[in-house]
Amino acid sequence: MGIDYITGNENTLRLGFFFGTLAIMALWEIVAPRRALTVSKLMRWSNNLGLVFFNSFILRLLFPAAAVGVAVFAAEQGWGLLNYYSLPLAITIILSIIAMDFIIYLQHVLVHAVPALWRLHRVHHADLDYDVTTGARFHTIEIILSMLIKFATIVVIGAPVVAVIIFEIILNAMAMFNHGNVGLPKPLDTVLRWFIVTPDMHRVHHSIEDDETNSNFGFNLSWWDRVFGTYRDQPRKGHTGMTIGIRTFRDPKQASWITGLLAMPFIGKVSGYAINRRQWDDDNEH
Ligand SMILES: [Zn+2]
Ligand SMILES: [Zn+2]
Image (cartoon, rainbow, N blue to C red; front, side):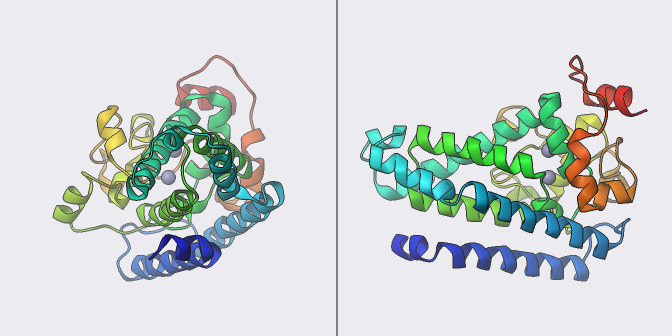
């Protein structure tokens, strides 16, 4: 696949990978589900996917040129670290993708650590089940924030347009893969985990237990968690015994309906002192 083909067929490729991955994972989840679902699939899927389509509509409205437009602009201005070196294009693309993945990891740690940002990110975690649609379920404001961080990243590192397209397609497909309600054979999972995030690895991050939620922040490469000490092998209660979600929102209507999801960041008192999330949620909601 040439670079011109990728940049020329950007939208087709994005949609193709999105619906292709969704279809493969949905089938896999029906044929070999890892856990029994606790909430009606129809309700979760219609609301989770409804939020995804709402978000892409808002993003198009706010940022018509999107991240690719920023990459074009940065390249024209000669901005960004990689524009100072004349490395082979393939190397520049690979370095850009790795750098963008590292920033996404740091951003994920940040939205867990800062209480105001956790309010946005808990929309992703409040899902009472864990499946392919969880991987795309984020609050609109968190999506906008991610986009702004991505713009800044592109300007600073000077990622080429094609790298931005490839990264966004990989991130989208990988998030849907590693949120799958599926499991890989143990030996394969063990080997893959040295390089990429597998469904069993990311599922630990959706545990109701604080220490388990605050681990496995990576979305694509598993290296960041291993290097920065946030890696956790398995949930204590096992993948079928663990509870998915957060303590604050256990009512399926609140945790599944799109209106509840959009309102979720604004529910509960704001408190400035707590870093420990469980403490913070308990103080505010109970
Ligand atoms: Zn998270
Ligand atoms: Zn997740």
